[in-house]
Every structure is written in C-alpha cells, then in structure tokens.
Image (cartoon, rainbow, N blue to C red):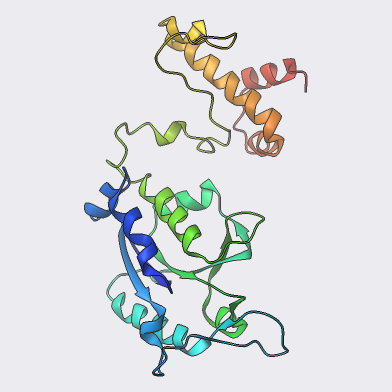
Length: 251
C-alpha cells in the first residue's frame, strides 16, 4: 500500500520512518510513504501557499491552487496503482480515528493524506476533493502532521512481520472492542503493598491466565470506557461468561 502525504513540513516524518519497530514496514515496502512538500507547488517567487481569510479574522487560510496542483501531481504518480486512493483531510471537525478505521486502511490500497495548517484549508478545496475527514480527538493541534504520523504508525504495526510476535496486535486495546488488560514483568516482587505480580500469572495455568486477563480487560473497560462495553454488547462480542462477570462488578 502507498500513502502520499501533502505537508508543509516533510522533515517531521524522517525519524518516524526510520526508527522503531514500524520501520520494518517502510524498509520492506509493505507501507510506502511519499512526501509532497506543498510549497513545491506554489507558483510565485515567495512560494506562498496561504493568504488572509475573507471576512476578516485571525490566522491564514491554505490556498486552493497549490493544493490542487499537488493533488494532480499525486494522482498522476498513482495512475497505475488501482484502485483510486481516498483523499483524507485531518481536521478537528472530522470523525474520530479509531481502530476500526485503522484496520480498514491497513487492508486497503493506502491514501492521500492532507496535513492542514494555520486556520485551515479553503473550504472549496475540501468540497471538491476530500473523501474523508479525520480527527485525533476533541482538541486542536498545530497541524495534521501528528495525526498523519499516528495513522501511519497504527497501519504499519498491523502489517505481517512488523511486530516480533504476530499475535501482539490481536491483544492490543480496541482490537476486540475492549481496553487491554494490565501487564507485568520481572522482578516478581517490588517493595510496597502493590509490589507483587498477581499469583495467577505465575501459575502456569494458561486457561486461568486467559480468563484473568479477560476479566481485567472487562473491568477496566467497564470502569473507564462503558461506551465500549455497550458497543461490544450490541455487536455480540461479549459471551455469557463475560456478562456474568460484568454483573458482579460494583459500578
């Protein structure tokens, strides 16, 4: 799959694409990333890509023409890569990025990622060209690059052979609709009342350990994200055993 990124700051992507476990996805070509500096598509000596908003007010607005030239260049470069990739605009007004959307991207052809800056992008470009709008949460960032990096990271780690254990991402938070359970490692005991690893994890009883982890995930999700419990229930992801355990919680 291939992601083309329209950005004013391509240098922000360098370390992410070459460091950490996800670098395997990029180095092996499982996820191809091409950066398109927007100023390269300006048509004036000052390489201007923004201007003051009509109607007044603070900030600057990203211009339609440079964006359309960048998009045309990307479409031409992707012409032999069916099917057509969607244009994704990162904006606080978009739908919140979640694991289901990440999994959809991870199984698809990629996308064109538009990283906005300043007060935003001229709405006419959005109306003409954008297929999907995504947000990272209910807060405002300086630009879309951080969200693009988050999406690339989430997609890359789902590719075969990227994580050391192929089952790792199957146990992550949200993979089955719940938050992940707590995890422990060496040493077995630390100073203080909460210094011991739960005995069940040292028992060697894999069935009991699996059930303990499931119950901890259910409890954590019910306490912190009851909306996820409701969604899991509505989609049939909770077993009768899960429901019996949830009924014992004092929430």
